[in-house]
Amino acid sequence: MNRKTFLCLAVPAGAAAAAGLPRNFDVTRYRILTPKVSRPIHIAMLADLHDNYYGRQMQVLVSLLKNEKPDLILMPGDMLHDHRDNRNSFCFLQQLQEFPVFYSPGNHEEFLDDYEADMQKLIEMGIHVLQNQTETITIRDSVLEIAGLRCGVRADQSPFSAEEVNGLFHTDHFRILLSHQPHWTALYQNVRADLILAGHAHGGQWIIPFTGQGLYAPNQGLFPKITSGLYTFPESRMIVTRGICWQSYHIPKLYNNPELIMITLSPREEHA
Ligand SMILES: [Fe+2]
Image 1 (cartoon, rainbow, N blue to C red):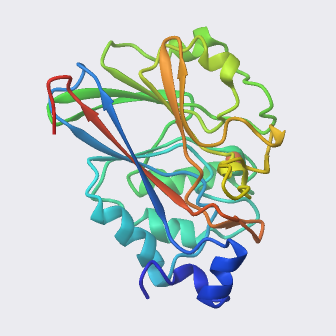
Image 2: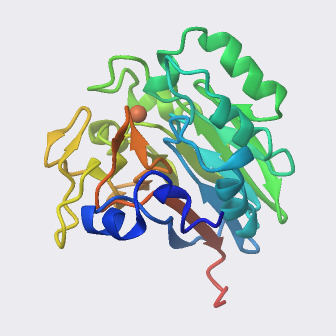
């Protein structure tokens, strides 16, 4: 089974396309120029897997990701889903041990029956689970400082102050904040991070054709504004993914393919 057919198991391809059901992955690419890296660094970002199934041993998704040959994988939340056994998610995650993987919890991890046990399982797979913590990593002679927030169960507004978030960073190396919630813009206005990565909104789940406008996102309601793409703040920028899931709560996305984001950090003199 190739990745073009994985989503059409239950629905004929033509009918799926006509109905706007996801039929393939979108790989969205960003390039960020920064003097804080000396050579290009390729980062894969994915969030909101929600235990979706992607073929036997999750090979469709594993292949997609490995073919991109990332230096680093970042996951800002909801890769697991509450009230599920998460066999698909764990199967996927345990196949990434050749990569450095950093992970911050989303709201659906907060609702897990045994949050601590599941986070421990991720840690034993070698995943760096960041729960209001920071770690540094050296890749291609450059240091990245990566912080991750726990988003909590009541996520309409951030429980963190900007001072608390800025206090997680201790260096002037390239700073990345993994924060599941894209709508905490009041917080992000005052965060000093080079890059914030968020998910959660699923692109608005059902995108109105030819508009790019999503229908609904949790915490934002109908016609949400912060669901996908690049957003800028005074001292930071944020990339929001539409999520690597094709459905959640058995409700499929419409006109909204699963999204893998690839980010290249490049030094300013880099022209490749
Ligand atoms: Fe979420």
